[in-house]
Image 1 (cartoon, rainbow, N blue to C red):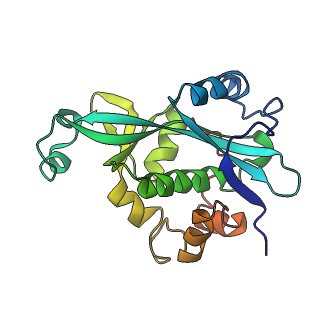
Image 2: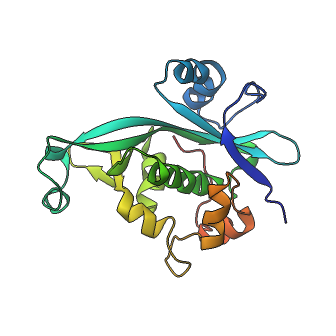
Length: 208
């Protein structure tokens, strides 16, 4: 059965004007600024599109980043090479249109971001996010992100951990199945009935 949503790079045929997540800053960025960042090569944007209507249900952006190794918890830092910084991938923004919230789509976008980061040619140590508010920070903590001690709304998740918790075997608490991973590799989101079962404690997904 065809998945109800597809994930793809943002293209010129995508209608961004009606996107409304309920977070004004995230909506304004998607409507007016994201294409400038893409052209300047400072970020890439991926959109979840409803297969039947081609309506944008959600989006996220990825950009390269780095983490000073001194900012990492000691238990993480001691396992790493003694470089001054570690490479990372920043999820700059992540949002779900209000009409599609409560269906686990935010969690599936996060899993797709992890998969793309793991599959990229340049190696990266972790995903990095700057949560817009406490609700968003709680969403990321739910999926295993840790906050930096001096920046509680900046969080990171080692990609080695993400591979196990977001993309691991079906018996893992927050896992997607191997079949869903294969679908994601072909840029198709898994069916969200399944994702909802995996993330059924998420009521809304207007994260940033």
